[in-house]
View 1 (cartoon, rainbow, N blue to C red):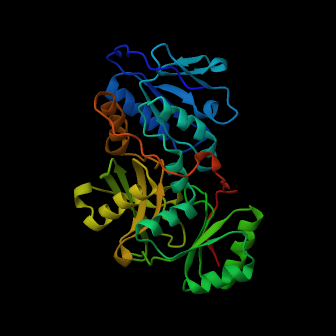
View 2: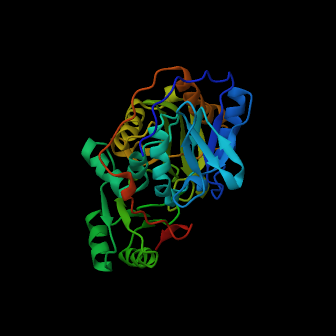
View 3: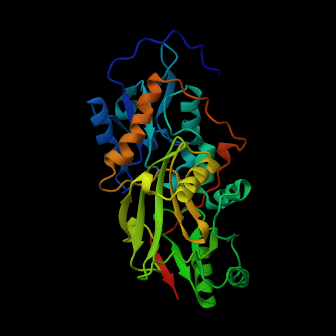
Length: 352
C-alpha cells in the first residue's frame, strides 16, 4: 500500500536520534568506532540495532509515524524508534542482499543515511559486477577473467592468458579470505578444486607487481566521501604471497590526503563513483600508472581512524539533517535480484 502523505514535520530535538544498525556477527569492530563518533559529535550514544531484525525474515518492522516519518519497531527486542539518521554499517558481504528491502524502505521515507542504494552495494560486493562497471567507465584495473565453475583446463587457459602470475579471489569475499597468489598450473588446478568445493564463482587477475624495493607487497586504501578523499593509508605486507590486508598482517602507514598522489586520488574517486557509492574504501596500487583492485562498501576502521574516517562519516549524516540533500541516484538493476555466493572459509595465502 502507498504510504500516507507526509504531514508537517514536528521540530526535531536538539540532540538527534541516531540508529546504528549493524550485524553483531561481524568481528571487524566498526560499530564501536561509529558509536564513539556519534557520542563525540552529539553527546549521546546511538541506539544500537541488530541488522538481522530488518533482514529478510527478521521480526523488525518499519511503519509510518504520525508525521509520516519512518518508525522502526522490533517488539521482541523492545525497540520502538523514529530515527533522525541511520548508520547502516558492518554488514558481512554474504548478508547484504537480505537487507535490500530495508534499504528501499529507508530510501522511500527519505531517512538520512548513506546506507541506501542496494544496487550500489551489489555492484561493489560482487566483484564480477565491479569489473563490469570498471570496464564500462574506463577505471584502470589489472586484466581479469571471471570464472564460473570452470574445469581445470579452462582455469589453466585463463592463467596462461594472464601471464602465469595471478591472484585468485572469490566473487564475494571479505578481508582477503580465500584469496591466493598462483604461479604454477598445478596451483591453478588446486584452486579450481578449492572454489568448486565451495560452489564459488571466482576471478583470476594479472599480478600488479606491486612490490617495494625491499621485497614487500604494498597497496593503498583510500577513503572517499562525497566525491573527495578524506583519508588514506599504505599497506605493507612482508609476506608477498599473502593478501595485502591489515587483517592478514599488513602494516598500515597513514597518508595525509594532500600527500596522496593526484593519480591515486583521482582513481579512488572514479572507482567509488563507478559503483555508485557515496562512501567507500578503495584498494589500489600505483604500479602500471595506477590500478584499482576493489571498492569496499563498508571499509573497516583501525586504530587511529576514529577522527580520520569514522567521525567524518557520522558528521556527513548530521550535516544532512540541516542541509539540502541531492536526490538519491536511481539505477536500473533490480536490487532484489541478488545472487551472491559467500566465501566458505577464511584462509588466504599462496598455493604452490
